[in-house]
Image (cartoon, rainbow, N blue to C red; front, side):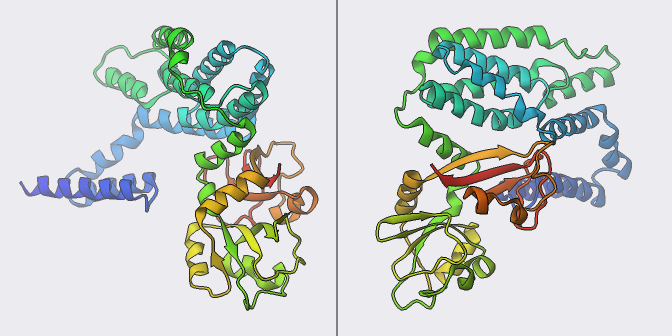
Length: 375
């Protein structure tokens, strides 16, 4: 009876850690495995047996393949052929997005496919004039329907194949799922063309603005941008941006300065600050607490952030390719801000890991840069 309570305690702790997100998911899994072995609920041999399972090794290989395609930039280049359909009808765009996403999901994790094709879908929306809301849902549906195309494309397929093998039965071959999944994908495309598209929401609006809003919301970049105001008698007035130490002390990047109704984008380090200047800054949420404790700056209401950013700044993402001259250099040496007047507000490596220190990170092929600049 005591073992049951121990097991329930381990499961409860793991559940809390998963929900809280304080530790990486894989680290929590290894901690659970260690706890089960240390408490004697499983033997060390049983605890390590999973690492020799073909299902586990196959899942590892699938993630390695996904990382390889993303790191080399191949995965992001796959979305480029879709741009040739920008002049097609809405039905053509929906069918192409669903088919392309489903086929790509046979090789790459579905979440990664959605992240890769999101910018392409938004660009299609901008160039074709169709609202993003009518293209993104077919894209998502295509990713979900095409996941089980092969016996190695999703963990459930892998586990089912391994279960048959363990039971001494003939396992599924790699393409046994393809006819069924192909029929499901075809039925999904037909449904979307005949019925589903009439159920999709039509949200009118500027698709160019929607593009950078979608990127910002998908990666939660909009929560890292806020505005501050320099009050009267602040010690910062009369100082340049470099002298203010906003970057070195508060880890903030000044994207723009609004002064007397005039917006100055990508201000130079020698730009002098004046009282009542409104600064659009980028930084992590925890650094916001430092500003609240500072008497030098005042936080503006969040509504002003959305208004200023939507009116003056545009967000886009870019991928570092293998032959890019940016490969191997740091952001400080890249000249993006100095020569092109754009800011890198976030950086993700090829395996979708966020980079904390943007200034010291050396760019590698597959890195995703999230840029903010003038429209």
